[in-house]
Image (cartoon, rainbow, N blue to C red; front, side, top):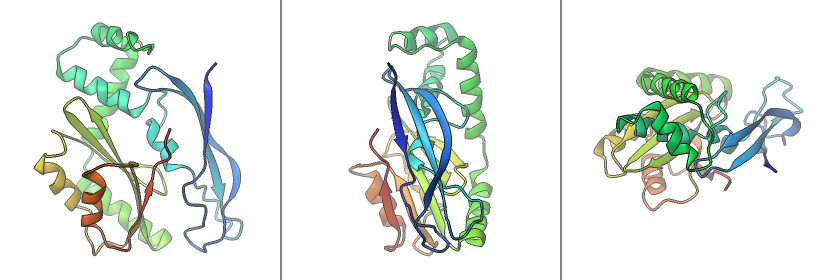
Length: 228
């Protein structure tokens, strides 16, 4: 039997008027393969403001970052495929690798997931992030981000999401936490002057979270992803 997990927004106050959000409907229900071979049905519950009546639906940052939009494999599996491709493994070899972990995946899915990864990797985050910041300030008078860190072998992947739209703003790979390019990347959009009020990120880390906090205003609130 496949287990189900339900996620609601990490913040249940309207960012515009501070009224308590109320449940409306699930914005997604899908079965996700995790990198350990487990399958879980993820229900991302949508909430809205009863006072603003602006039609805006707020949902869980945790549920959103588990898998890419329209994908039924975890984001970590996508990153694993990228690293296995770098090792010059064939599609059949990658399929066999995942099969040993209890993950059913076809060679066609391998190609599709790698193509999606390459598309995100090639995004111009230097343009995309400032544009998102401008839109968030216009719509909400503040900036909120969701930042995920995924470790695969000797590499780390950092994915930056627009907290309000769930759009991916940056998808970057680095050679471990000591990679100086990672600091430069984070410093390109995080700074104490930016009106970033909320960042949702990983639960615990001896280096990454303190680094993020050191780059932001002391007023920036950090919210941990729900353990899943």
